[in-house]
Image (cartoon, rainbow, N blue to C red; front, side, top):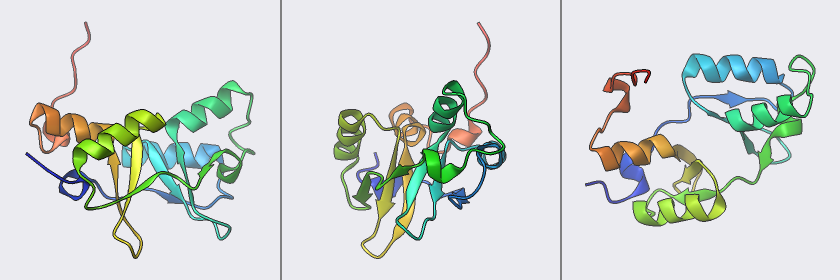
Length: 136
């Protein structure tokens, strides 16, 4: 069984400018089949998730004029790649986050998300190979 975050983390799939529109972000997230983007901002990087987009829509944001930087989370929760997986899970629960950024000390090396954790618990190393759930 994997022991550290590095054993199960995934790659960063989407990077966005804070000036990108929420509609552009949604398209990128959908195309990459992921729920998180890294926001590369000279004032400090952040993250924006699909949930942030939903909150913006619920608050009445116009997807074509609202900017990623207006809705991103600055200073996201980050852990070292050597963090024990159980500790990372505890942190995700205590901070109510579904994603943790993973650093090797010199920069961002990946992302741990809830799907990665569920994959470990279910024994499926590659959830991309799991067939879609049936409707009930």
